[in-house]
Amino acid sequence: MDEIIKQIKDPKLLLQVEHVVPFHGYLATGAFIGIQMFNIAQDVLGFRDKERIYVTCETSNCIPDAFQILAGATIGNNGMRITDFGKMAVVVNLQVPPGVTSARGVRIYLDHAKTEKYPKLHAWYLNTEKIPHEDVIPELLKAGDGVYSHEIIDIAIPVKPAKCVKVCKQCGESFVCHGDEVLCGTCTDT
Ligand SMILES: [Zn+2]
Image (tube, rainbow, N blue to C red; front, side):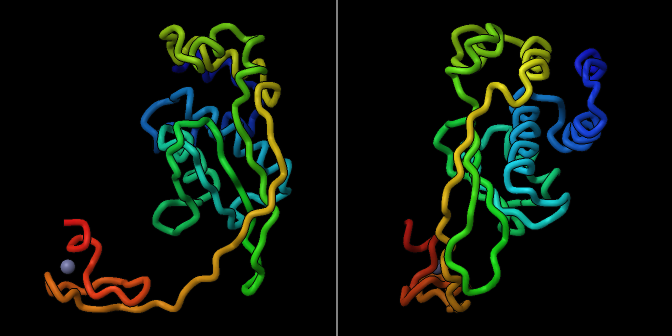
């Protein structure tokens, strides 16, 4: 891993890697992709470091950790949502003032038509060969933004319902309800 980190010359990228690695555990290819996606989102949407952003990751693997650390968009603060479609893709939008029902966002994905130019990255991405992180990340470094595609999209912002708490008629525990249900999620599922 140190060998890869030595190849990173951009000081901003290096600092980002140093933040993400201890959180994720190691420099995974997917975590590195998450960092590159964060930087593209920042360029496109023009948000500042630590500005509140909302992220939907289309995979549960690696990429969420980069955004949780770099953007502070976490599962616990509702800045991070994961819809696991198994895609190397994220949707990012900025916070909107109360009452505004749509936001400008960007969807960024690793584009297999563009990774073709980088054989190891391409083979790793399409899983045609087992390629170690040490061989894939240098190609991502070389490629930079060149292997990603993005599109600007409008995102509907849901109206937050008033919080309601009930005591479940079956198990007797309290739960946050979403409508007129009388059983908690656990008792509904079983
Ligand atoms: Zn219950």
